[in-house]
Image (cartoon, rainbow, N blue to C red):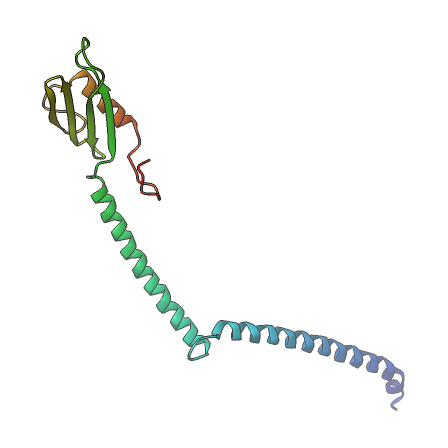
Length: 174
């Protein structure tokens, strides 16, 4: 009556052994994954007061919000600085010249001081035997309401063509 069982017993035993081996491999793999997840969880919650994932995420979100606020403040400050910098002297132009061809040397000069938009002043120093005289002309958009001399025009051209002046880390103008 159980003769089929005697014939199938070795095959059933092999099948059971294969199922047990597969279960053992699967169990060992699951244990390794659990150990890996456990170590990752420990690393994630290390240094937190609550020690659980919910607390870690809440702390992280608080940090992200604080960083966003600080970034927004820094951006506002940078925009204010950019607006203010537009009105500071950024372009310089200097031309030395000799206004009197029969005497002296090029001790006279024109100095252009202008902001980003070309607003500023043209300072002209005229040196002669009797003394030195200094004149200033206002500039608006690289133009003046007063007639500009050839030397002043040249100095404006030099100031316009140079990149805005900047101070390097040594405190020197580049």
